[in-house]
Amino acid sequence: MDRVLKVRNLSKRYNKGCPACYRKTGADFDSNICPDCGSVVAAHDVSFDLYAGEILGIMGESGSGKSTAVKCLYFDQEPTGGSATFYDQGEAYELFELNKAEQRRLVNQRFGMVYQNPHQGLNFEISAGGNIAERLLMSDVDNYDRIRQRAVSLLTRTEVLPERMDEMPKNFSGGMQQRVQIAKALATSPPLLFLDEVTTGLDLSVQAAILDLILEIQQQSHTAMIVVTHDLGVIRLLADRTLVMKYGRVIETGLTDQILEDPQHAYTQRLVASAL
Amino acid sequence: MSLAQQFGFLDEYAKKEIRRTSLKAVAIPGYQVPYSSREMPMGRGFGTGGLQLTLALIGEGEVLKVIDQGSDDSVNAVNLRAFIEMTCPGVGTTRVTGEADLIQSRHRIPEKPLREDQLLVLQVPYPDPLVVVEASEEKRKQLHGEADYSRLLVKLYEDIVKFDEITISHRYPTRINDHYVIDPSPIPRWDVPKLHMSKALVLLGAGREKKIYAVPPYTKAEPLAFEDKPFRVEAFLDERGRRRACARCGCDSSFLDEYVDSNSGHQVYRCSDADWCDEQLTRRSAPEVING
Image (cartoon, rainbow over all chains, first blue to last red; front, side, top):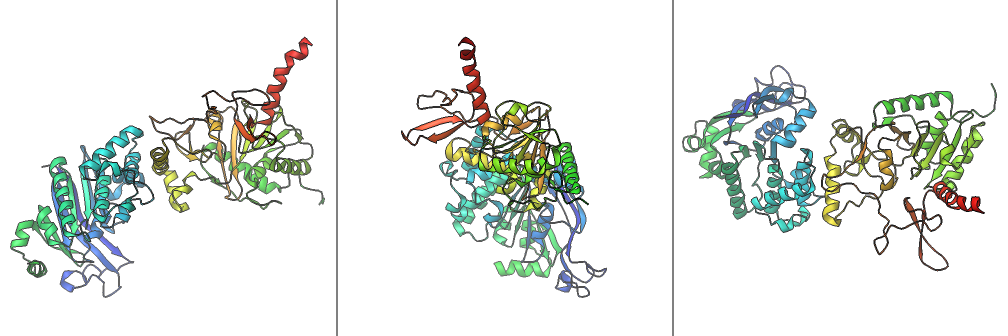
């Protein structure tokens, strides 16, 4: 299998920090705030590999560092330490050593991001089609008709009526906005997609439809995805492998069914038990 | 020390800074170079950016033309010209485009092609084309640095979606030398192609925003557009699809202003560039003079 992403020892700490920060925080201490200096260790020592066509789930409660890890990989935040290598079209990119322009190129063309809140991923000042056009224009497509055609095919695929493509996203329902956001993320056919709590806040039938769509995309395009969620149902349905995080540390990792059927860490056991 | 007025109103340090800024602007085509725009005896927004450039660059024995919307007799042009005449003794003024060494203009570029030995100074109200899509200057600088103008193109896209064509009538975003996109001041679309490979140096000064930038001679200036929706200039077609002509001189290849005739109530079209109109009129009547 082709490796898409290799992450090693990724750390993110807020505030200056002290030598004891990493030693005195984590799941064993039930805290991610350093008792000596008060710095917040949002994520520490996160390592994993991601292969083409695979969906990796990152599960954990609020503040466990799951979103932080993904934001670092998407360059929304700068990590404090660690490395990440992105393998694409025969090249290996050391993500945290790239300059801003190279990072922007990857984000615009090779990565896709779907946020929990459509306001973060979409520009509400411009039409749904314009949002997709923006991403295509960022990757140097400058033919108007080609942009229109691509937007129509993407919206059709994500089950948004193409007749509505020139409407403003604010006229759409929450589920529809999420579909537009997914269409925008897919515009450049990225080999790597980040999904941050994509179904949180949607009603159940819409959740199911969105999850179906994500699975369909994975099967058709062989896109590697990282799914961040606190919802066990989403993990069960989507993820092949899962990382469980707590207080900034990875406390358990393995095949999803293995984790759900035979959780090892006390926290995971509680989590699984509470959901059943 | 003499109490007489300093030549060019500005002190020598100010002029030196503006010249140095202009050199940098020429060296980095399209880049907005910040400078310490001085207080002038007129409100910011009345052409102080262009005026400071003119005062710093003009010298004794040189000839100046000042235009406002194509006319030498508009309020802004008259006042700026009077101020320069007062503060720069020995500088001549003209209305004839071909006779001027330096042309300061608001909203128009003369119809007559400029020469290598001429200099065009444009007054700019809003120097940054990205200001409509990004409010933070810090982020705008980053976008300029990375030549990321996709959000301006999205604006054009939305225009075509809504109106089937690009509706920007003036201040058309134009890419200079394959990198920086400039706001070419409120010149109409008609004038944008004149920047491309212009023989004359074009300097743009924004007094209120404290920026100077340049389109150097023989430099590419390409209006943003889509591959299949090219940039177009104003067509000036009448109801029957024919090109309108100037009611005064008959020229059908110039930028036209629309007036309403106060007697008949009809629309009348005339050349916007007053000197160009005069020249066409003389040229048309010249053969008659010889024959007569």
